[in-house]
Image (cartoon, rainbow, N blue to C red; front, top):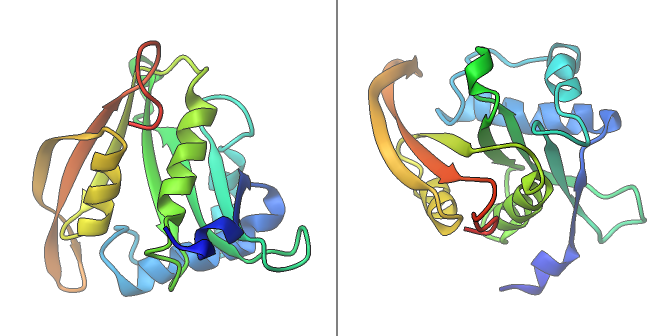
Length: 184
């Protein structure tokens, strides 16, 4: 573990984070198949997403910031979310989780810190399962999810088309709620 990781603070996301969060997300839209969005979004287009992630309840947004700067002015290094899995009422105790890191922020344990904070925040919620869809190939994301106790439950083959080709999405599942270990 590097000392760089100790220079990171994880907190709940707030509305003033929207510009930086949108910039991080748009990197993945433009440069990778990790998200299947194909057009960059403006902060205003992302505002409903941000506002759907409250500071309590099952849908959360955790943000990692660089603490090398003055308090409150740290650069956002990444974020993790838990979102509704599907819109139908029977899915209310399931969430879909994801982590996005700023370019250059990988390999410092930030994804681990974000998931630790996210699953700790979700520990008291009425949730049964967390799911993660991982566009393939993405070994770093697979390792992160497996470290947190997710198990591979299937792969959708060639489910999305981006950059002129088709991509698979591997699905991972983690038990939540009483008796589960938030850290995996």
